[in-house]
Length: 464
Image (cartoon, rainbow, N blue to C red; front, side, top):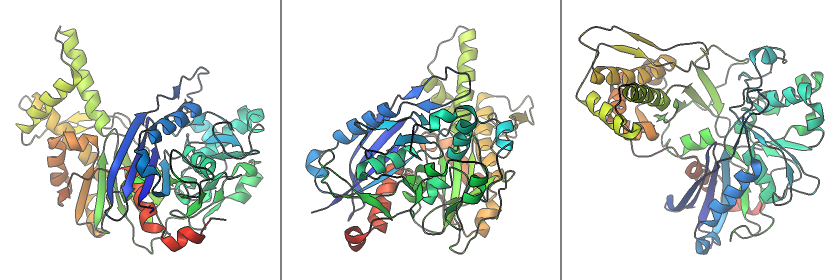
């Protein structure tokens, strides 16, 4: 009896795998392992690459830790992963990673495409801008700087696309709009690549993946995999962000707030929403393809828990200079305790020390400073409030209200461990907030497969 769905998320730093019991929608087993796959940039081009072989080895070890007696009852496999990045491979003999030929993974963090290079690229027919770290931009960079490299490969996709292709033995990559939109030069309204624009630019079109719908099957496993039977349906790979939202977005009237390293606030747009015809680089809100023809409105801030971590690092450094030693964890707990004793503050902190995508040169600021509000409690309370106010400047409460949002579902490690942040969510957005259901991409992709692929679909569907 096919009882379970296997959900896998290939993250930037770790891999997570879960077994989800579809009927109860409960996770009955879970494993997470760090990949430790980063490769140092030895060429000084701001490259961010990872060792693909190490990622795949970690994936195998992670899956192998799941209970073998339950793996034989897996009826579906869903895979999500880090968006934007690109991996090249050769499909001449299928996609078996134990003997396949593949490149390093160039991740979404890659910085080799500077502003001058990006400005030289053709304008996309898309509502989303193209940035460094996007798959198509990276391929354009190789065309200019290392064209011989591209000749050694026949297929390109994200790391999650590669895993799906390998499991199913596909001779080409099938990519959903969630990942294609994150590559650039993809029109989500027509669900097509900008073929004419790319052709005129001399782009190697054979590297473009085929198109599959989000939530559909890519194929079936060729062989047994850690106890999962051959012939098990595998969903086309999905984006980690969309799957994280799916794991905790239970109603159209919910917004999902995630604060971990960075911060994101998103909600589902109405079914009839159409995105703009062209990129809006100055807009703080982007529209990501979700499922069907729907979209998520997303305010993605670069400044979240990392701003608090930088603050704690600064205090730790000051204390060391004064001859006082205290661990970051202990200091974090103490500054939060101070802020809990300080219910409000007139001090104002703008925490944009890393800039924002729509304002890359923004800096942080501290204003309204007086002799009465420079205590540790005041400063920490103001910083926490500033993180939420920065998000609110990107997606104002009035916009949420107009969209019909009645509740915020909060998730992420920073929110989970910081009561001050949770207090400020209510004050800044003035809507009820609930916590305890963490956004989880591995759980989300498993839920997608449970919800969107029925038994009849499993029996007959394979994306062409």
